Image 1 (spheres, rainbow over the protein chains, first blue to last red):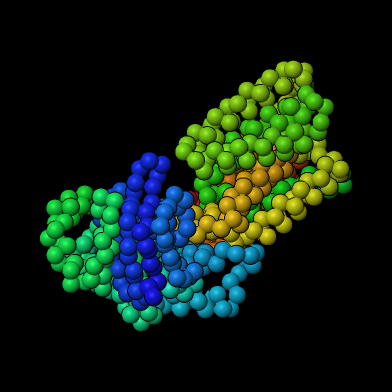
Image 2 (image 1 turned 120 degrees about the vertical axis):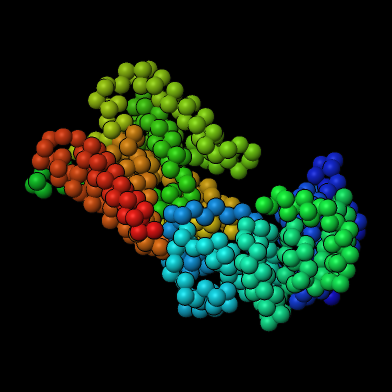
Amino acid sequence: MGIIQTKDFGIRYGEKIILSNANINVPEGRFFAVLGENGAGKTSFIKALIGQNQQINGQIQLNTKKVGFVPQFRDITRDYPLSIAEFVGLNYNHGWRLWLNEQEHAAVFSALKRLDLSEMADKRLGLASGGQKQRAFVAQALVQQPDLLILDESTASLDHEHKVALLQTIKQLQKEEHLTVLFITHELKLVSQFADGYLFFENGHVSQGEAHELQSLTTQITHVHEEDEVRHV
Amino acid sequence: MFSYDFMQNAFMAGTVVSIVAGIVGTFVVARNYAFLTHSLSEIGFAGAAFGLFAGWPALLGMMFATSGASLAIGALESGYTKRDNVTSAISALAIGLGILFLALGHTSTTAATGILFGSVLGISRQDLWLLLALAVFVIIILLVNYRALKQLAFDEAGIFLQSRAQKSVRYIFLVMIALSVSISSQLVGSLLIFVLVTLPAASAKYYVTSTVKLMGLAIIFALFGTWVGLTLAYLTNLPTSFFIAMIEVLIYLISVWQFQKNA
């Protein structure tokens, strides 16, 4: 049984059909690239997956409650005061305790270590580099030890070297911890080196494929990709 | 100086208000709510004017107006409009009404000045108990919701699976800002709310990197300004709010300057 399964699944906004007849099955512990143009339904699908989309039909099943999410936009200005460790701990958002307890503290530092941020635990997030910030975001999503990690365009703002480094880290986490990864991105060529499979959203449909098919998908939607690259520069 | 009852009351009120302002201010600054806070204090002015017109205590009118307005802003901002625009509209409405009630109530200029610029030296022992009770209430509510509030203020984008508790904390926070604004304006007046709620917390964020330390340092900055301000006002016979404002602005400028220099 897959961690994400849909059967004849669809999403609407009023009259507008965002997605229809989606039949996908994402197995556990795999790295899936989530591809498609802006407005093709990627975000709507993710929202439906976690139960935040109201107008749905058919079946959608998420077989875990432990989901980590790295959002696309975060406004971290230079004067953002919290340290990286404190930021990572923000995911403990229940209750009143002013300080993290021992177990929570250990989880934060283990997440920092996995993202190679141990040395920078006390550094102000506002003064961290772009790559460090993205790693801190991933660390925060990992603190509660999710089964499924969703990343929304996490590499978009990084230079090539840091894109590859971040993807390597996530790939390693996926393998070592049997994590399922959904990596939403426009950077098909880049992610094809890391993904085991893909979900491709286009014109209200979603198709699923294996890693080796990503190459043919690359040629199929090359012009889309090129446009995106121009947009990112 | 402390042989006078009014100075004792003023110092105690100042201490209570500074502690609340430091705590609330930390979250206000983190969530970029400075403008909203300022607008709430203008709305508080309208509420106080209405209170005087209706024959209530000014503080009561203020609390009703600010709490109501904060809930209205909360309900509107989650939708389609920019938060600042919503706030401007509600604030404009409130100030207009405030001026009307001042005129209708034939309120004395002294009372109006008191609302706008604060009247800490006029605080009675009875006012003090009310301030203290409100302050304890605000602090308890904030602490009970501490972690959800912290995430809301410092990383709203990171709230992924929004539980009912997280939705309600948004409104709880707004009402607590409203109450803090009402309390603080007893000290510095509604025109100078950011002197105690925003500036100390905004200064603190240049020195420390954890939420607890941010709250602590904001309280220290607020207390320092209030105590020194009251003392200078006593010695010189000039307005307390003037001194508190100058001290807090000075602390802020120094903190920004030091941060720029080091970062």
